[in-house]
Image (cartoon, rainbow, N blue to C red; front, top):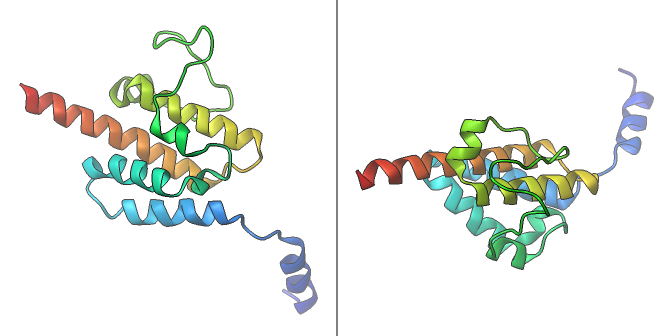
Length: 141
């Protein structure tokens, strides 16, 4: 590859938003943890630094249960710009966690800020919530 082409690529590639780097840092850190601890670590990171969400959600969003859109129930709710998830994963993670992930993914996509790091972060959040709930259910028996 020529030097001129490398310079052109470097100049034409916009810098990565800081929030994407922050999301990647959180994912990298939590992926070293046992699955059952990841949801709590992600929740804590989002509360501590809501900027991970690129300005599409504030601290209050992460502190409260999400309000579903009109007509959205656990049995019927669609987020075309959300994160794809298997029905079993949605049920396992719980409606509230799934809803929060879908709202956040939709907002990030609509703002043009949804990154591979955000996808990994939100997917990990869903999966770890499901694992955590399953472990709690087994413990209760």
